[in-house]
Image 1 (cartoon, helix red, strand yellow):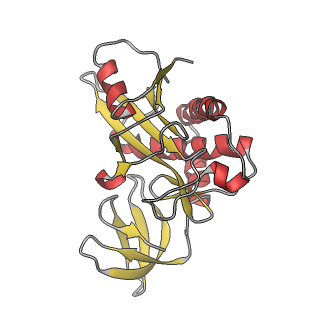
Image 2 (cartoon, rainbow, N blue to C red):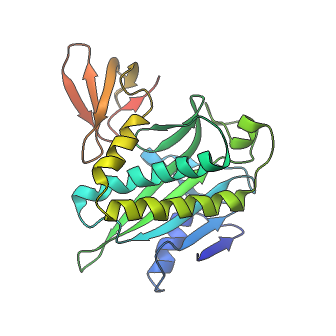
Image 3 (cartoon, rainbow, N blue to C red):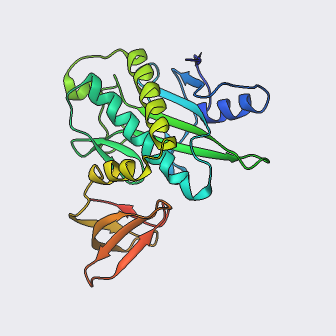
Amino acid sequence: MNIIKLDATASTNTYLKDLLSTTDLINFTVVSTENQYAGKGQRGAVWNAEVGTNLTFSVLVKDCVSTIEEIFCLNIVTALAVKSAIKKMLNVELDIKWPNDILAVNSKLGGILIENIFKADGKIVSIVGIGINVNQTVFNSLNKATSLAKLIGHQLDKDQLLVGVVEQLICYCHRLREGEESQLWEEYLCQLYRKGQPSVFELPSGKRFMGIIEGVSPYGHLEVRCEDDSLFTFGVKEVKLLY
């Protein structure tokens, strides 16, 4: 396993992407840092992490998905891999919040951001960015955030968890390549946060509405059944699940 450890970098996703442009890297190469000072998140948000306490890393994934239609499958296998790795270390209940946040007791434990590179030969190379709150216990500026240390009451070995996540990601990518797409979708949907429960959503305009998550489309859009029984699909920046 090729793991590149950095003391600090603006973004592990950007670092790995730049490195890939000049170096022939093996599949599942990892870039990890103790201090990511300009990390990215969904919706253009900044991923903030206390220096030296959490896992912030990116993984190069080649040949896991081969078409645009399959791209969201990588989100699925990554979320399942993170959850599986944590569950192998700790007995904690976790959920996957669409599109790919990891929650514990309704609080954010981790997040995923995937950037895809479309090569001239038609192949898709992905940079899978993962952040997991491990040993941080104070979250001054973040609402509804938690960490593994807060959940279990003691510090954890970050390197052990890092290796565990990458091993699980390799395993789940192998399952996808071996034709288990439908099974992986089923696992993802079974663990989807608030699926089948009345929930409050917010549109970019600020308007709020009630609805029930029915599923996720093949392209990764959230499917919501509204109070008038109409079914709407939303992209990542088109709706926010509040509670």
